[in-house]
Image (tube, rainbow, N blue to C red):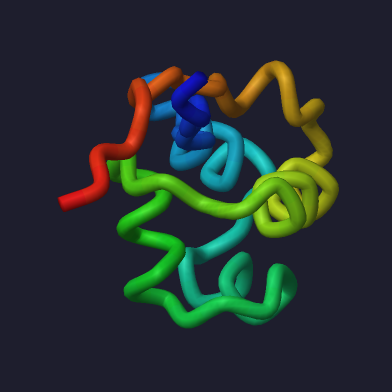
Length: 80
């Protein structure tokens, strides 16, 4: 049975909107989360992230994980 793989991604622009509503710049938020500003920007634009980082972002902006992120099934990984 093939393994399933998932990505944790922002629901649309939910992370960016929550950060702005929380009054945080991208630099302030990135520092509080412990990632670089370019990494935060990538996450805001739909790049996948870890469960740990997603929860840190949610905590920093005062929202729930479920409110900001969705788990997307990317299907089985193929071995070549």
